[in-house]
Length: 505
Image (tube, rainbow, N blue to C red; front, top):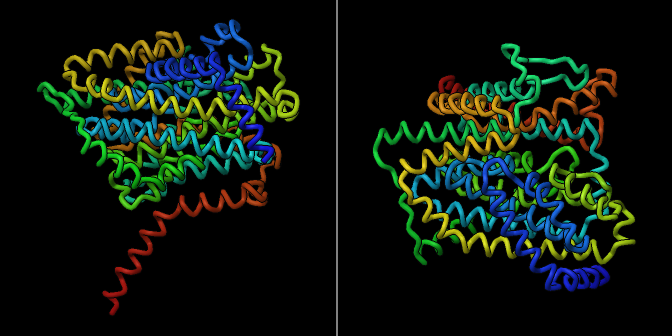
């Protein structure tokens, strides 16, 4: 009852006219920021942080939190309509969202993304409301061995998939791991894999540059080849019957979005993770548990709802360690944390006692932001579909310009623009040769998280690999990961044994 009372007081704070107006404004701005390639929630929150000094601190954090939420919704828009992920958190949505749009089912993909985001946001906020303090202590139990085991589990969900060419999948992961290792060594500080002695390779490859290159430029080249000079227009129609049919299909994917919501929330509360690994892991698990895994990458609705539910749930989850422990769970919450300190708020366990109105007002504002985000997103879907009816001869140069601007805006280096073009050609060739791109992207995201966790774990244990197996949390995760990793080999061996029996008889 005390919880309900505190939450009710929080809604009274969140529904004050100024706060409600800022929440709606934050959602709208966030949708725009999330949909623009190269901007993303981190840049959006950082750019607008000074503007919030015009309003009280509680109103300011509600505005930025709503912007964060809106950006999570917005990232799916450009991923589906243009094939360019608006932010790294929406990369997994591109895998199946873009094929759906190309086959004339963009309305289904956009509605699925919006509703899954709403479901992920709602489930994560409920978990946040009920279990904030105990979950914060769980996050503290995750040391380097646990984080490394979790990363291996994420890799295993991609390697252990049935239906894909395992050798090509492993090759794709290796390519991604090599690219993630470019830059300075985190322990010795020595430069490594500085290709052709170019200074640009002394820093790590920016993930957004890579994602825009592979999916934006690569997708554009692929579509030009497929169209062979013919004028292509996405054939999208909207009718009540079609919307009802789409809703029925989306409801049938409830296992995928529910799994994505829970997985995304728990990955989000880990300080080293965030929404991008959460969404990629949710995509991998959804494909692994699907009855039709062969449809993934070709327009599976489950491939849209799982990552979208996960990235929204992770955005809420990442606020949990920020508020309860003062540890940001993602780059965006790191900026939010800086803003809270500037406003005189001290995050930590005492915050729930000393700043009750602020904490519960913020939690209530997350419910409101989630509701407004789904309403505004669905209201704008006809506009997005109208945009998709533009002939590809007009869309292609637009995608190219947006990719260039997005790639440059993320790092402000011309080197990255040229690198993005090269990566685009690489992505196009991988698709032409039927190599899966998703495992490479997963490796580039998870590699920089897994490597320091592995090396620090081995330093702590003096090189003993059993440190990953004899701890209560990392041990079970590692065993599950290894089972999934070797499952394809077990399946091949089992088929051969079953195939030999009749011959012997």
